[in-house]
Length: 161
Image 1 (cartoon, rainbow, N blue to C red):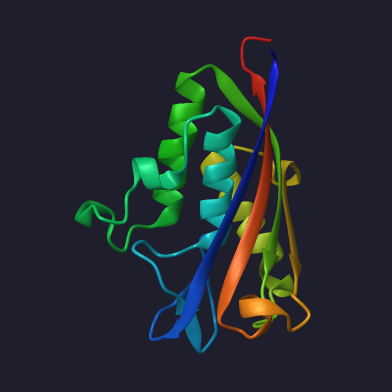
Image 2 (cartoon, rainbow, N blue to C red; image 1 turned 180 degrees about the vertical axis):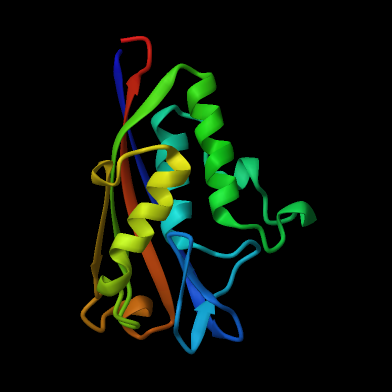
């Protein structure tokens, strides 16, 4: 098999007193995401998609929230570690498509910066890194502004092709 597809999802609660980090970018907002690391749901969803494509489990297996070494960790550092796992197994990223679901703040102005940051870490061209943003139309916990969620799909190709 020369291609593999992985799917990732993450959601974190919004709280006062934390920075809002999405795609490795700090976004101005009165609340941030609660989590053991920086709680970057977009980067976490991408990592889970990468790991899932190779049946390697999820990020909790590699970076458990019970391990103090990952407290406050920069998710882009974790992303680079996941990229190493992918490459060690003979795979490369063909492209990533993702969506961030949040009522507020407006994320569209930050898409290009998030794309550039993630693409840089993954050594991709920005056009290989798709990011869309949407709301949840006031439905569910994301719609009530209790949290932010992200979905990601990654296509891997065997690097020996």
